[in-house]
Image (cartoon, rainbow, N blue to C red; front, side, top):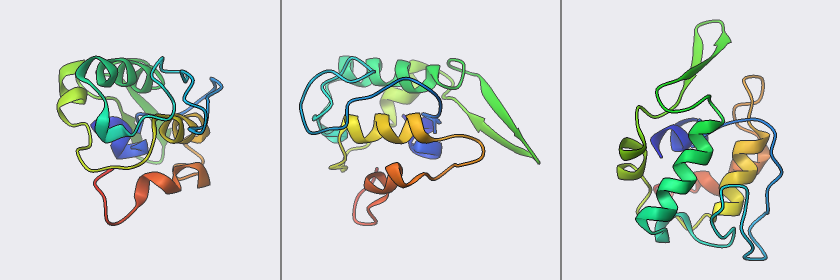
Length: 124
């Protein structure tokens, strides 16, 4: 989840156009994981599904998006790398992370939807 977390979180985990559920309802979001689940409470299978979703926004594992001017958004090298770097202290939800990923772009790396992921007291 480093990519997500790096640019996203970055995807970078990352940016582009699926619709998402925003965390209140508990239905499955675009990643297939319940949108109201905290990022730090995901099972390994849920982390893998979320990693696949987030890194897919960058073209897949090992890929990158060239934003120009020397800026690139890099996906995680592998699903295992992403899962192993998942946050362990982050109250943000899957729905909030999906909203951030969907709003992010090379021209807007930190959209307002990402605010819940950058709580300075947590490791999102």
